Structures are given as structure tokens and as C-alpha cells.
Length: 115
Length: 112
Image 1 (cartoon, rainbow over the protein chains, first blue to last red):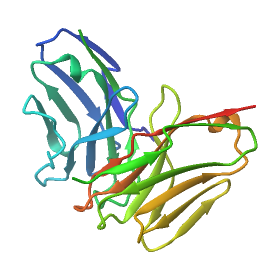
Image 2 (cartoon, each protein chain N blue to C red):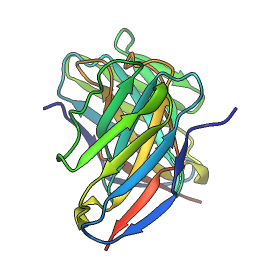
Image 3 (cartoon, rainbow over the protein chains, first blue to last red):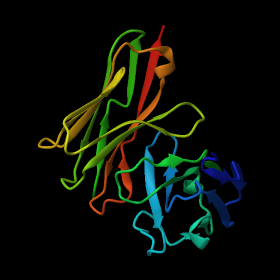
Image 4 (cartoon, rainbow over the protein chains, first blue to last red):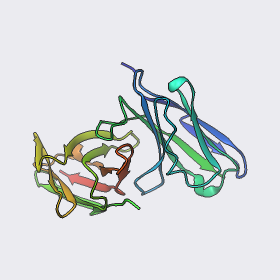
């Protein structure tokens, strides 16, 4: 079946502009995660959604970052007033449930470059 | 906060040798420890995982060991092959049991 998809695959934006990154999880997966991967770094947790529960936003680095998940499926990560340090690959993952002990399936990522 | 340390950051081995990657975690409540492999330009994929109720798990050439007392776990790859070359990430579940905290990764290079 179809895996996790993300769009766009690459995004170049000017400093100060807003960007929106999209994630389509695997159908039927109730948990959705956003991570950030900077060059040479690990996967930094940003936010997670589980069904209709309030999202865990504990990993968001600043109030310029926000995310929503509409209808329990597609999610959008928004970065306002982008800064050069926001340049990274943004990865989305989904799992059947958010039990913390299930495989997370990753999307291909969106490479964001802020000039 | 919760933290996962991973060593070494880079590892070079000859084909056929074994490779060992070690991770330590800080949260004693962590109970799930997956390992992901990320090939160049590709997405991370789960290769093996272990839960806190077992000390070792093996799947063909890869194995993972867990020492909960010492809060460390390791990935062992035997008879390495060039296609094992990739970045490997360890991770530990959070106290809330939802998101994962990842290590910074180990770049494994297997030369033939």
C-alpha cells in the first residue's frame, strides 16, 4: 500500500517568509509525528498527534512553529518568519497507534533551505 | 530532559567484520528501543527493536542487547556487507510513551 508522503520534497524560501509543509500519513494510522533532521544531527522530535487528543507540542523549538492535523489524517507544519537556522530536512512519520512501542513509518522528508 | 547518547559517530569496517554501535539513555521509564537505518538520501527505516522485558533480540546478522540497569543498549552487525553502509539511529521511548528520542546517528562505512 501507499506509504507516508510529504510535499514539497524541496523548498527554498527567503528569510522572513512563512512556509507550509504537508504530510499524508498511511491510511488508518492514528498517530502522526514531525521530526527535524539538521545536517549531521539526529532526528529532533517536534510534535505528535494521536487521534482526537490534544497534540504533544513539547518539541517545538519556538512559537514560530505550529502544526495542525485536519480530520485525523493530513497534517501541515507551518513555520512563520523563517530563519536560516530553520534549514533542515523535516520528516513526518506515522504509526498505527501512539503507544510508544510501535514502528514509525517515515516519509521521504521535505528539505527546507532558508536563504 | 530525556536524552539518548550514541557512539561512535562514525565507524569504518572491512567487509566481513563485525560492527557495534552503543547508546545510553537517561529516562529509566523508557521501555522501547528501536534502531533505524537511513541510507543516503532515503528515509529512516526500522531494522530491529527491543522492549524492556527482554535482554537480547536477534534477526539474522543483526542483534540488539539491552541492559536496563545500566541504561544502555547496543546494535551488533555481524559479517558486514557494503550494503550495510548507512547512518544508524538508536532511539528510546519517552516517559509519556509516545514520541521517540533519537541519538545523533552513527555513519557506518563498510569497505570491500
